[in-house]
View 1 (cartoon, one colour):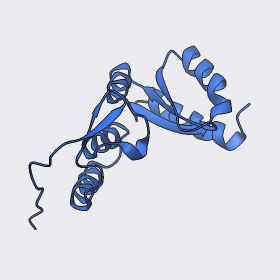
View 2 (cartoon, rainbow, N blue to C red; view 1 turned 135 degrees about the horizontal axis):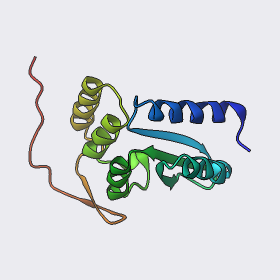
View 3 (tube, rainbow, N blue to C red; view 1 turned 30 degrees about the vertical axis):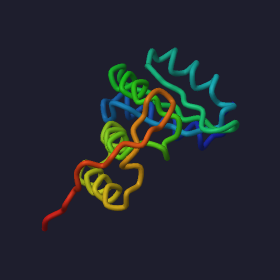
View 4 (cartoon, rainbow, N blue to C red; view 1 turned 120 degrees about the vertical axis):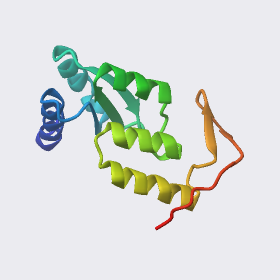
Amino acid sequence: MMEDMDMQVFTHHLQEYKKGLRTLALHTTKASNRAVIEKRLKRETIDCYIQEVNGTKINVFFGNPICIEVIKQMNITSLSDLTDEEDFILGTMLGYDRVQQCERYLKRKRNGKNNNVGKIGNTSIAQPQTETIRVIG
């Protein structure tokens, strides 16, 4: 069974989704909680996608079926390996502040983190960088 705090956080995310405050939620938890979470989401008829982080943790994305389909199309293997664009899209879909997401995107571009990587299936390939982002102001 889930620990009380973990269940409270999951329930909070679930309530926010059901109230329309979120269209997508991400809950990271112990892999041992997978069955309990899947059962609850199935009972609530809420679409989900579960990503294994490692042998002991999972990321549970749940919410609007269209958002879940986008997550599936992103073919996420690790949140730390997202391209700049995927990171921006995911953050925006999760309801993070748009301006802060723009700032994060530009910072990642300036720092060169993952901005020259593209994905084909589960494999990352290098792509030439063809433009530079410049901030004026």
